[in-house]
Image (cartoon, one colour):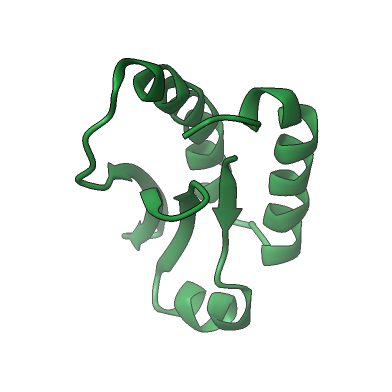
Length: 105
């Protein structure tokens, strides 16, 4: 199971500081984060994997996460992004990829 986590209560405060983040979790651990930072008026996102080792099957699952993360990075870089829009986008990703995410990681 893949879960996407956004710190909604502190979104506005973090946004004002030039920071956005999505945590990507399996059932027990954060396996990666997507951070976006504002620099000179432009949002720039980065995929940051955590220091886990992955078996062959888990690498296939990680491929699914990376594929989805590419899209999420572009969403985080949108200058007019609102937390509710992001949450709805994540829900849509989870709904449309439910079968792919079941059993992942």
